[in-house]
Length: 326
Image (cartoon, rainbow, N blue to C red; front, side, top):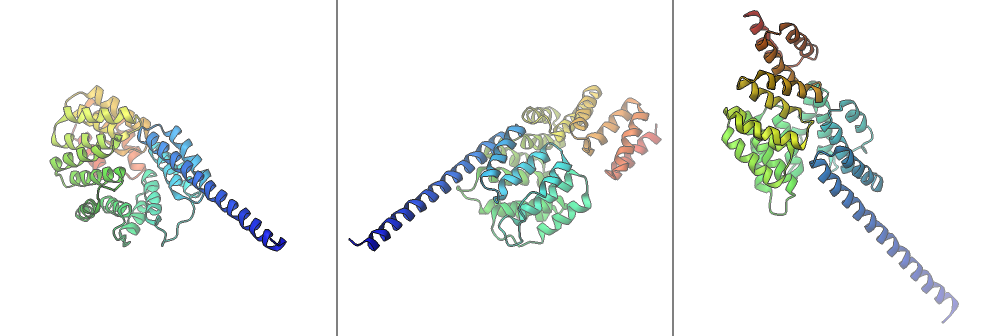
């Protein structure tokens, strides 16, 4: 065997080992990334946000150009009602072009951030961008589009979009996606005042994904039916999972007020404001409780807060009319 041929063999063997090593390293990183994401998602569902963020940060380090860990970290800030951090963090997300498969989800992050900041003009700008896109049969994008229709109060369009999504789902579809689809159908049916249908969809959602917002919405459907006992039960389950869930605290407060328990109502509504100062529902219904008590001075203070933020003008008008009629 001549020296030249031997060198060729050695070179080929070396490159083969090198390529194998690179492939093994790539697989190792992929497996670590997947494990971090799975652990983070479980912690996120259990509302253990700091622990979840640590897992997603690790996933981000492993795959810096992968958008999913960034999105998950953003949703943690969203759940913690930190609008400034949420918007600031979006600057770190890798830029997503319009032809990228994650583009609709990218727009949805901005929609959520401006919702949190109570900047409804900017929120609607992103909602309109989403509904104008042709998302085809991409299931996560269909979900985002249905939610966008819902946010724009185009409920019939939202319903059609959710129903299309459910029709396209098969046994292989992600359980979280299934839960979110049925959750969305429940939410839209609440807006259409179809409460029994909403309850059935929320129960279906919770079969696929046990999460605080599912119990919160189930509580809201029962509250709208006037079944305050069941409503409070589900609101309590929601805050057991996520004590920061302002919607559930507001819902409990509204149930207590409807049942004539003003002290408990006030405590729950104050808790809703404590966890999220911009939660208009908590503040609006606290105003009603304060008027019930005859505490007009404090009621007006909360009215001023909502007026400064241009929130709930019709609700404020109702409160002012109640005060005038005392």
